[in-house]
Length: 156
Image (tube, rainbow, N blue to C red):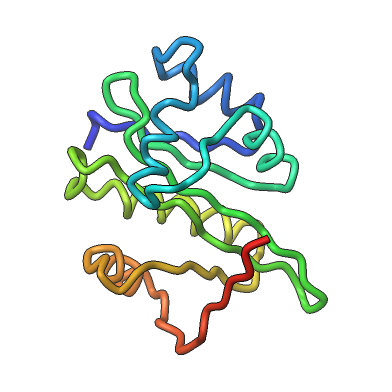
């Protein structure tokens, strides 16, 4: 596993100083992140510097996996402040298909769970499609419990 490096960023300065120091992507900082997002959802809007800044200003955290100076995996944590406490939501857990099967998703998730515990979040939520068999198995092995809910979305 030493050929992979896991990097955590809590803000854009931290990301550019820590994470991007590992990457030789020049001005196309988000190229690999946008490619990863496309693996999750073909129609996903492209990440921009503005959306990245907004993500961090809202308290988002990104964990990335690098290999040979390229981002090949990522996962994000966002916090939600509710009337009865602060919870977390894990989003964008994805590893480039070429690097799947090397335990990277587990490493990314372990890091986010550690961060959530340090922030004393009440719980973590995440959603994945039933057809993502490996992802469902991973989340269950980490202690996530499948909930019987009806997810709804209103597109604005």
